[in-house]
Length: 405
Length: 176
Image (cartoon, rainbow over all chains, first blue to last red):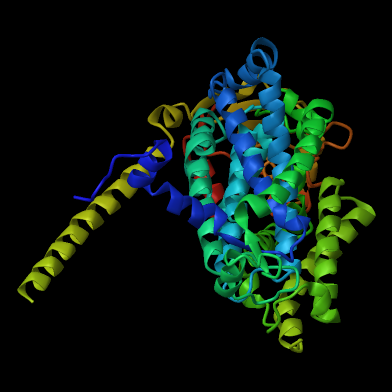
């Protein structure tokens, strides 16, 4: 048996049993972060805080939400919104956070692309991050079903229909996913389960993997500099913290991180209190009706770019390109053949143009996805969709021609 | 050495038990997601076809989906006869012709609206159009409205049951 001595205090008592001092060093004070970073490196913490807001508000919603086709709409729009004290707060926090979390995810993603943070040992950080994006998408979609309004119902109808695979006519698969011929009780029940249990568990597991994948390669920096973390950490611990290229995760980095989080939270709660409308589709305030399609069915803003890639083509080609758009980002570390790990503006013109064009093109696709598919808008949408695919096909070529800087 | 082979055996034995268990539980999980017997049993709807009037589009419900029933007027019928793909889609009961279709756009499942002025259907989601016999007139929908399995029973139509007329339509590729 291990040897225990009489504890000198609570901290020592815990340290003997849980090695809390060692744990604190490994996780916080001796987890090293480069100094040459900027506020974009705080997005990870902003996402953690937003996820926490989603979990807490979700727990309160879960206590009053009724997952039945008869009761769901009423429980959300009457019980939670009118009867429960501060029920509106949980709903608006949940709805706004579900939308804003995607904005932050996109910033986080494009920061990673810009600074090449998916290369040289950081591939798994990128892949686990993209798996998180998929899990968050599934979480957002399943949550969107729960109020059982018109948009919930018809989004559920259209998205599950995608699984028939166009001309493959896998209607049996669609009925299996729904547990019925149309979205009904079985469908609502299983999406409720997915939303409150299975997908959140997967997300938490993936967050663990994402952080774990960060551990050995460490966080990237603005200059793509390869830092000898052991040597720099030693310099820091020996007292020369000024000349060391690294700092402690806590409290050095955390203090800056939480400053950004503070600014973000002011913006976030401004939205929750004064501008939550963007996260609440007016059509979804009509109860689900299987015999009446809303005039325009469109997804939430964060899915519009991939929806717009589906739309201009016939169903089979549309589905193939849609699937392409869903998985292609995952392969980024392998499609980028360049030897350089640094900011896009230092890698030479081709990649820099690629980066900004990809970002602008996704904004264009998002805008076109929201507009009705008529006239000039459908032409712009078509061009942008073709450009999206062409740019990904061109990426390995332009990056392999890149010179070492 | 002896220990190793024993451990190897135990590992394989556990692997076999776990493998059987994994396959069996996947089967159970798959079956638990299937539509329930009560859902399947409710999948039949009987329509009395004698009550419909010509030129009036009526929406019925079968398996939670809208069913478009349109008794064809003489003008519609004359137009449908010009195109064999149109006339084959119609259901004939006691001398009258009916369009009986699942009222969901074959593109992504929205419900097209009937336009009385032009006697056709227009889908608001992505702009697909269908004529009075349910045949597609304008893409993106890949085909005309699907026809639900039906069985003719006198002047009644039982939806959900396969009759010889529907089987013939399916075999001829008129519906899925």
